[in-house]
Amino acid sequence: MTKLNLDINQIIELDAESKYFKEVYKSQVLEIDSNHLVISIPYQEKQPILLGVGTKIEVTAKRIGKDSKFKSEIIDRDLDQEIFKIIKPDGISRNKRQYSKENMAKVIAVTSGKGGVGKSTFVSNLAVALAQNDKRVSVIDADLGTANLDILLNINAEYNLGDVIDGRKALIEVVEEGPEGVVLVPGGSGFQALTKLEEVQFSKLISSFNQLDEYSDLILIDTAAGVSENVTNFLLAADETIVVTTPEPHCIIDAYSIIKVASNLEKDIKIKLVVNKADDKEEATKVANKMKQVVKEYIGLDIDFIGYIAMDLNVLKAIKKKELLLLSHPRSKASKGIKDIVSNHFLEEEASEEVKGIKGFINKFKGFIS
Ligand SMILES: Nc1ncnc2c1ncn2[C@@H]1O[C@H](COP(=O)(O)OP(=O)(O)OP(=O)(O)O)[C@@H](O)[C@H]1O
Ligand SMILES: [Mg+2]
Image 1: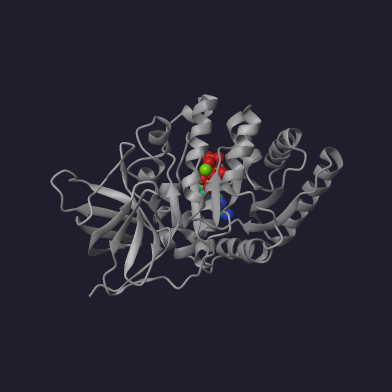
Image 2: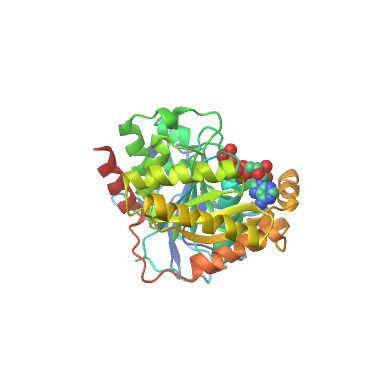
């Protein structure tokens, strides 16, 4: 008997005993009951894969380092809701994490003025740290020029956002599951299109993020660096924006610029600051206080310093070994910084916060382009 814990939200693969549907299709676990599972109807080339009731399937659930497989059968389908009901074999149970369906996913954009400050390192490790604290996390690699979250999260991505933008794939077909069940929407390198997207295409892309909402507590968006319209569109539409800076003067000035541009477009924008590659807490606090003061004085905006990450050679060691810092060096200085940000900012606050979620994100975005 296979013993396996499944998460709500988890990506699975279906291999059907069918003459017509011969490939392996991606789906997502939506509900786990005592004797059946509800899963999303898979898509291929943007067409729903309408397996018939009674079709036998082999299900593969991916987990770090190992896949688990079990046999099942489709017992019902609802084409309007785009779901299959399948048999749940004994031994399959629901992970003990408890999720509330009513909560909308909080959308957080992570950006910087200057490139190379450590956004992607931060986002990938933050996602896994949040997942270790029982949050369901989806990550969107929106830096299509030099997307690399797949590499940082050690995921072999077959498709990416480029395929979604070009209309070849539905979002669910490109997502991959990474460490601790983090769901990644891969970005795809060398793809210039995001900076040149037509508004309609961009709007469609953002609408497709909708599919992540119900199954995520947090949606992290790793944007490109610098001020461009598509980057600011992401920032404006998110519930909050984390600006990453290093203590270097150039970097601070560029961070200031992006805050200024964003706040010119929306005066109440919620900006959080993370200082990366700091020598120590003292240096980081100094940089953050200076930044807060200048932003308050010249822009009239209160920004919130949510933590710092030390300059740490373990970050480079982890990358060389193709491992995620938080998993390979959990007690390193840099990992500690990320964990502190999770406990101080993400686990403490909440409740009272107004979260618009991805639907708010989409509406807000549409408001900006019209
Ligand atoms: N705390 C840290 N200590 C040491 N090195 C770090 C730290 N954070 C990031 N780095 C290194 O800095 C470099 C840039 O990091 P990363 O790719 O995460 O930046 P980025 O802001 O996403 O860059 P880009 O703007 O190109 O997307 C990488 O080599 C990374 O290993
Ligand atoms: Mg990056």
